[in-house]
Image: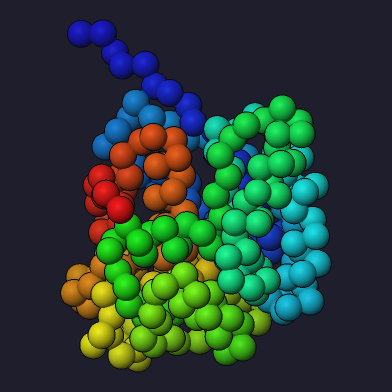
Length: 257
């Protein structure tokens, strides 16, 4: 029997300079996918933007570096580009993920690259829609004012946020060091009685992958995160089935929105 030729898919990532999780959880999910679909392999390329503290001022300064980061990635000719910082986009006001994605697309095209662009902010909204959820509860690592901006952003997209938990960690490196196992207890502080789905981490920097399936099983609700939603969008943009074992309902198989 002739061996199946594997296809390499090149993933470009724009990440905050202090982000330690985007480049661990996304590759981990797609490596896990390779265990069930070895014909697809994934290669990652990153460009970084300076940001250490999750404050409005530093988020704005980081956003100003987006074009430079996109131009750097264009040289690698990725098949898809994902930009990571959810709150940096949502803090700019409802619908800003569309603006951010268009800006990155324009920068890529200016250098002859035509990769589709996704943002973790837009991906989270798409993931909620794909699950058919109209009411969600969320956990964030942010200070309460930033969580409020995230809630407003999600609700402007037509999804009710029935409850939100802020862990109030302003230092971005400290967010990356949070123990994902703690989320198995944190989610119990939320009122899930009216929720259709649970966003266990509305932040690609807060580690959560290790707890997604366990919390989904315990809560009896679909569980997604900014990271699992980003993986979902990466796979669908590559026209690949959105399947990652053990990563919750969103990545359990083909989903029709």
